[in-house]
Length: 180
Image (cartoon, rainbow, N blue to C red; front, side, top):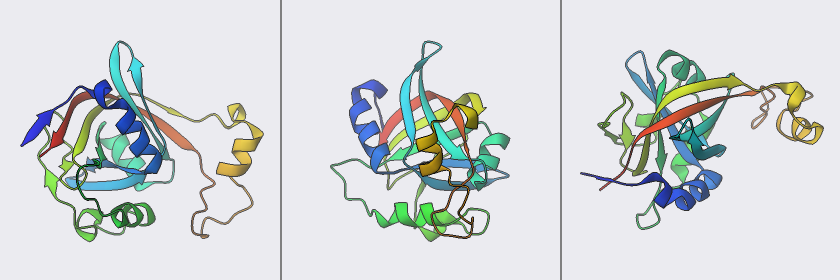
């Protein structure tokens, strides 16, 4: 069962969870994939609620989002136990090589509006349809942030090394609910 919610009634909870890590789920070529994100924004643009997700150019998820312009944001809720190792698992493997849904033991829940499912284990769900996407402009990023988040002197083979830039995906929130 799903309990519909008003997104902005849960804004503080959503943003706080994003800061600690949530899952962004995509689907392309009939396959569902999820990844851990801890960068995102909640707001209003074009008079519609939006969730903006930032995905590195090299990620398998980016390819999925470019093929299917829909995603879900899957957020744990305080009143339910949550195994945080799920975020570690989904943030350290690529969906190009493993089935993260199976590997993390996640349960897919039929979506209400989009083609991408929710996740029972992270029940606060935002169903989003991409309305805008944009690559980051390296020349507009401060030198401090370039050095910290986009190091050029680190091999991609080093765990946690992420020298490539992000693309911003603005997703209009077309449904929001808690899976019960």
